[in-house]
Length: 388
Image (tube, rainbow, N blue to C red; front, side, top):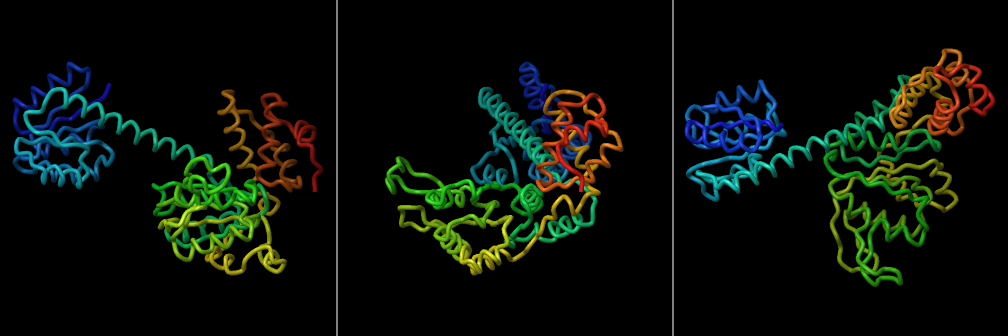
């Protein structure tokens, strides 16, 4: 049941609001001034706060400001008998969800409270989803090779510097990109991914920059490209080494000017995007072979982060296996299986050419084919590999 706090120095107003809200099955607490209101906020969790503006000791605006330190996500609905547009604007600027004039209209009050609750629920769900996504892209392990990557991420993430991530397929380049975004000042903005290898060369420009209606045969309506979608956030260009030279030239221009032009359009559109790129290719060799632009390489590679193959961080395999066992059990709704030390040792000694992606597939196979504990015999039988 949603819990609401009413902060108002007028007992009659508090009683009336309390009666109305309790009739709607809300739990209601009261505070007779700003000090007691802040004290209640520090001791209890509320879903919505109704707060008067003109109060002795601490006025409502100050309560609103100080509440951001205590409960930053709780929606505040400010109420006042002396409502003006300027007051409403000031309250909104300070973080209020809405502003009501005393005595508040009953229907308007209830609709505003319901909308504020919906917003609070949305904020909570968004945080849970972000936490879940962050956990899915968690970098697991304590090897020195991985710690080196972590240190680089921590230094680079808060900046807007472009990053080029290198490493073999399945090593975790996308996880590095995710961490760079989550730890950046753009974390509240979107992270948009483009797999340059999966998009035909004739469509990559439309994918990145969008197109105008009628710009080519199948362009039946306007399309917003990935650069625009990522505005205010991060654009992750995966497998950048597979991008066509024509698209490379346009990406270079976008990075130089922070502007893009849709295919078939003439208008220049400003974009505020941090670009993180990744590749499993040796781009210096691709430059020599004239498959990749050297000027684009230098634009993208302000910071270089190399993700080591799993064979170079075998000490992380036990932790990775445990995470995969837990993830797979959660996804399948079953109890997490255990694995014997001998089976772990066997897995550590295998040649992991497919890196972390291959290890997860093997663990999933072991979970399906083995009993409650995965034995060394199971590992030998179902890993389907030869040890090095």
